[in-house]
Length: 486
Image 1 (spheres, one colour):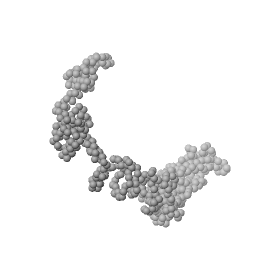
Image 2 (cartoon, one colour; image 1 turned 90 degrees about the vertical axis):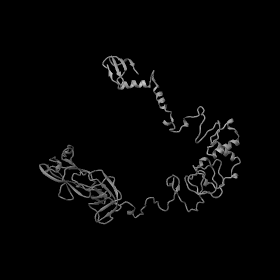
Image 3 (cartoon, helix red, strand yellow; image 1 turned 120 degrees about the vertical axis):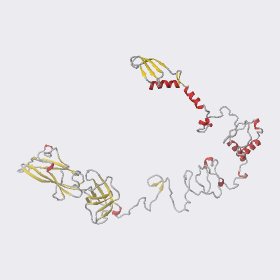
Image 4 (cartoon, helix red, strand yellow; image 1 turned 30 degrees about the vertical axis):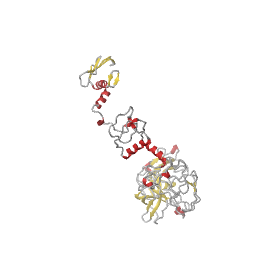
């Protein structure tokens, strides 16, 4: 007899045995009559045999004289076979009995092997009795004390598989009902009857240490900046060192970037400031200086400077450079996009007259009845009244807005003229577009006659004209073709 000890759920057991001469125990003899129906398995000392022979197999075809060696026999038992549901379960003990075979004319019954199901190093091997969820179920066997299994690791093994299993940690246990709660379910879906093996706890609670929560690294940990082992590199967030007033020893170097930070800045800023976004509360005291080119048009967000942002009379004569007025006037004139040339039609093309004209036009909303005459000018906004003429190239594609030319903007016969122009396009040789389309339509949709002879005729779709007449050879190759495009 073989004692396999504790074997894992789903194991396949290979059971060898030998037979000898009844008159000479040293002489091996063969046996007869071995079949899978002779293999019986009993559970936990009970007299009820396993109901099914499924999962039993004879080795070397018939199990007799294994590898042609007289007196050596064997069979296998697959514990993953769950035909008799729940028969193989963790924590139970089994006998494998052979009953009956014939050896040396005698009928022999014997215990071939014994085994238990479970994991050898487990403190409890049992099975799932009832299942409430994947994280809550009852055990077939278990201790009577509440919380007795809390912190233990368990392995749940599928009752019908040699390899499918998953691990979990027990977070709660009720002894009176043997109810287990898991911190999380396993990697496969467990069911009633699955085997479960429970192991000793291996965590801080079991060893009397202090449990650490997430992101808790203790109170006495020194941090250093950088990206190496044990160093901290922050791309966002805030690190506070000491108290608010304890910042004396911290300095920003030329290569340090503040990023998108909120800060109170004292002293001078040198170099170029990229841009300022959001609202700036206020600037108090004297701003030392801004380097040359430090503030550009890109420094200001759209609408950054409004009437309320500038104190009354903040910019007066003393705040402007000597030539600021001239430069502003020039900028206004350039922005107006007016290019005036010396022309007798300007009447008085002097600086004073031009300035007066610009002022009058601005003050009256450009509705003055006056005229610039034939002076060359770029005009923005709307033009009212009659425009005398536009020079060659004066109107380009860019002059028209999207959808500017529509049906109402075209002359009554504009569509007809465009259609006629398209129809007159030469397609090939002397054929225009309309003539070509007539031939194509006939060839694809017209009646055909004479296809069995040497002359093939294709009619137009109105069956009025012989649109295409072709002379063909015996293979249908066209030798000559006559078209009618009337």
